Amino acid sequence: MIVQPGELGAPPTTTAQTESRRFTEDIGGRDATVWRTRSSDGYFTGAQWTAPRVWLSGTEQTADAADVEITIIRTVRFPST
Image 1 (tube, rainbow, N blue to C red):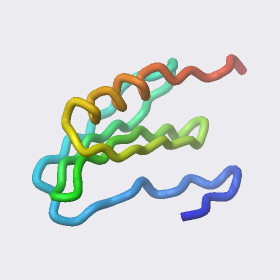
Image 2 (cartoon, rainbow, N blue to C red):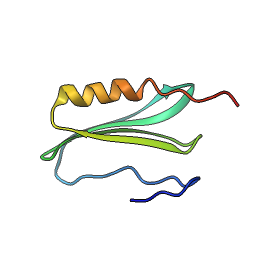
Image 3 (tube, rainbow, N blue to C red):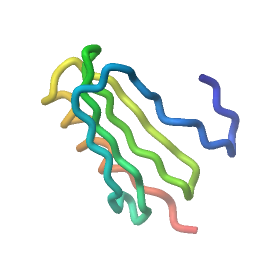
């Protein structure tokens, strides 16, 4: 997927989900929708902010590695406006 500057792309989706958690959390002083999904292909993690229009996503093979990705996502900070 190619996302142009200023566009908000859709977070990746998977089929055959066996466990999915989606929640809103304050990250970097902004509300973000965070997800962690387990499927037969592994673990999919990410976060999406509406302001600024940013999203991050990752894939991992183990639950521990997916937890590390969520921890890294929680370190995102935005410059003051």
